[in-house]
Length: 282
Image 1 (cartoon, rainbow, N blue to C red):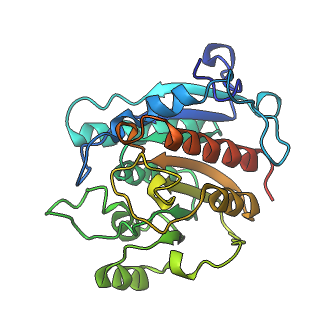
Image 2: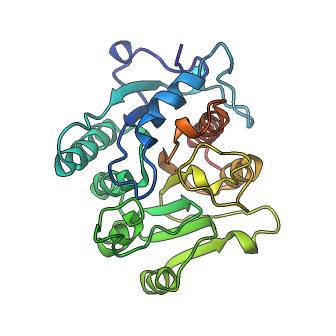
């Protein structure tokens, strides 16, 4: 049963939830391989309480210490403008409840409409972005809403007071120029030689592209970029984070490239440990 380690409660019985899972099965903005639309189903499937429990490593029991529900998937049929509008509305409904959205992608283009919703509820907002790529292209193949461009749009629209990117290792000169102009801090993979202890003054949103992880830990992504984070390194960064986490997305899971579901399991681990840190901020 897809129940996030037994922590998910029935939505109809828990209208005053504190965290909500929202799926976005969308990959029309992928520039290389399609398949990320199957990500939400794959994460839910691997999360069964028959395999995992609701306890996090830091001692939070998500079954008792949170009211976690699953509100289903955004309807991604139809054109892109409609889909992005429905993503924004779906996240906005969760935020209107005073709850924390946990968004399952989908390709990384979805983070832009997610943060458009956040801009109406949390301002100023900081963003912690895990990724092999900065996603700062002004456009890719003429598409300004490609999954390679969401952080360029976020910078352009002023949706974040600060952005910290961790694990990046596929950076162009144009990316560096955009980051410098937009005040984006890059923690490049080549410079990580020990634990990271990040501190955020504003509420923080985490956007986690699974290709931030080395392909050895996450083969189920469309863009394999060797030399990345281990799952343990990613969990350590989240556990050590100082700040109030107000939202999370986990994107770019392409389960067709990982029949053993190792990557989906890593995604679930990231979600569970982040949820624990949401319940118990450092």
